[in-house]
Amino acid sequence: MHRWWVFLHVAGVFGFLMAHGISAYVTFRLRRERDPARVSHLLELSASSVGAMWNAIGVLLLGGIVAGFTGHFWGQAWIWVAIGLFVAVIAAMYGLGTTWARRLRTIAAAMTEGTEAVSPQQFDDILRSQRPYTIAGIGFAGLLVILWLMIFKPTFGLGGGEAALSCPPPGRAIQICAVDDRSFVTRTVRAPAGEPFEIVFVNRDVGVEHNVSIYSDRSAEESLSVGEYILGDGTGRYSVPALDPSSYFFRCDIHPVMTGTLDVS
Image (cartoon, rainbow, N blue to C red; front, side, top):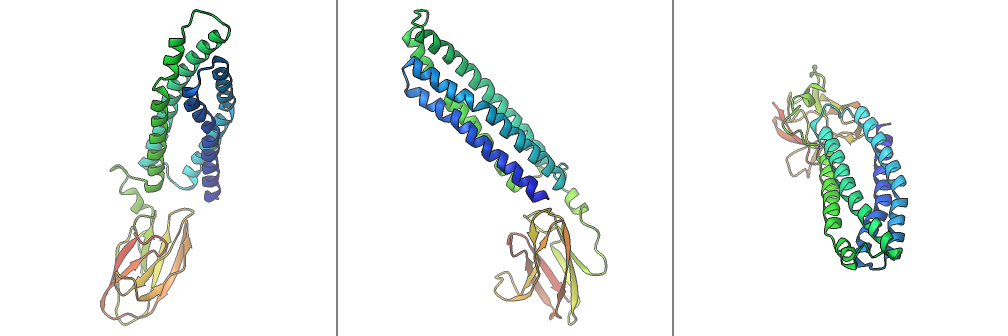
């Protein structure tokens, strides 16, 4: 179910970009226009997309909020930073964009009616304003940072110990745990030499598949045990054949940055 909420969130983002793309196109197209009537028509086109944009924002917020619960993300710092940044970017773009568009709409309407209260120089000055570049820069930079937060999920030095607590304490079997796609919580495990043993793999990364595979060394050329993929939130058990005394390498085959060491003695 978590994946469907993430899908809804991404669909909302896609809808937002489609709707807001109309306003972005109009904003830069206006810089080349000098016909007041044409400027008014373009501004009307931009305004017609605002309703769809806010609806898309509602969808992405709904999907993101519920996915935060199904993915157990609300205890992590990155999601709060992303929300704060999203609100700040929307507020900045709305404030800068509406004041500029409102003034341009007033001037264009006055010139279309033939009034002399507004000079062509004023009209040209606002069309050549650097405001559109400022708005676009804020939006583009904000989306990139939010995307980075969603993918890398930085802790910002907060809640670093919570991830380990989300995995149950090891029992008699060898246990390896994962809570994200960056590293295993358990990075070093030990097993007896010369006899088969079992690995209990606990995947707490909701909606994401991981596995544990053992290799002779870090080159990962010789596999000794390849575990099946476990979808989080889930648990899998791997039977590992007897190994000679040595230090072995294990990793997640889907996310190779997740690695660890198996000491057999």
